[in-house]
Length: 468
Image (cartoon, rainbow, N blue to C red; front, side):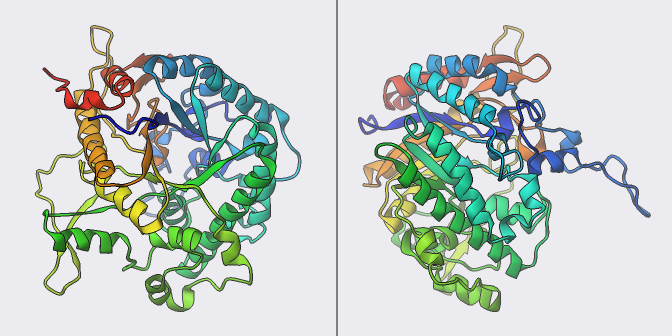
């Protein structure tokens, strides 16, 4: 069985993870530059002088050097047969200080990239914010400052004015759960904060308002019809059995907030699509919940055209004895990726299915993939059978969700290249293409050749055993 005739097959990346050229052509520092470059200071007992924010002190200074090698990378995308490429724009390439003086050289780079993609028959899907917040604006309060909404609008306008005649597919924010919860509450990512819940929710409210103003600006400044959405994590639960009770429990769990943190679906999507924060979240957060000013929720809930979902794993649930969804513990030997994330193909069925049914909007899989232990073999190739098997299992489940009636428009594999995996540095390899960071040599993996066949057959190749 093939996928719908107009299904979009793509791959994805983000600016800080692949571009490098961190201080080239006027680019200013982002919070990730600061976070990566932070040097531990001497302390008291127990001080560890080699402790760093990022694994082994890695930085995105060079990364995949995509800034200088984008033509080679687009040629590889074309050879794979990608129909679309999702990338992000580095805010500090456009405004080195986050606001104020515009840097035309930064816009020139994305101009060249978009033109190269279009000349190769690849549709660009641009993300405005993929975590690399300008350091200068962070020092003015960052997402805690209500002015961040205007800063984001001005940035979006500059990008829309330059690229909006050719880019027609946009995402505003990537994974607010991660850049807010992990970066501003858990200190696992940049900027490394541990904000109290009240302030965390203020930062979230301003980020969602920025999404809204970004949608407004794109609609007003881009030329021609636009398709606009955002790309949250889909915190996925799937039924432990095929029973109706467990299926309903999984859907209920994905649509609920049960803990006082931002690791959920509805705090963002309900606000954006339905125009209000969910009642169970307001009850849990209580007095810490934000107090929207008149017009705030109307701004947040600007009409969008699709929801992107980033899904790598899921959690099995059943209907508990108390009638509520209950997590089913995995067996200790449950398969995992190199990152030790559980392999859960059913997540790519139930996550997008829940999203499409709840919000009545088209869905794109904006990220899905796995970290593998990949290296160049003696034959000069990179053999990654686990990635092929992983992706095949997940895509077969996605096909079942489409067959069940879910409006799913496309799939973007994460990622096109091995790259800088945030606080894990270069330890994790997610790419369809291997990158030797010492030489910057690109080697398409076996999975890239397999994915090319999947794309060329519009998914029919999934029915062919790749290992026979």
